[in-house]
Image (cartoon, rainbow, N blue to C red; front, side):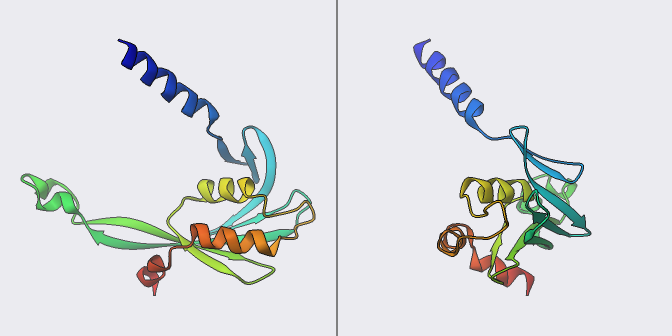
Length: 145
């Protein structure tokens, strides 16, 4: 009984501290607070500061992989392939980019958490390099070229 109670309390505390990210009417809201503006054009999204200074763009590209469930008994009911996504994140001022499989919400949350962008849209290069080292996955680059 004690283990169940402890597990329940731990899961509640983890869920209560997670940030909620929403894309709503051209605004990026984190925990209900407007932090960025966004613009979507097809598979490209651009984030800008609240002052309208664009600083990053995301380009989402899909690729297909074989579905492992297909090889299981009864697997003929599953599709032959699964669609996966690679997001190219390009920082507009520096031209630096990274490749990731994070969603747009997760990327916006990571940018906000790392405090990369100042109010005027300038990006701290040292923080940017750390951000790229942390989130870049070069093997995903091979999936789209």
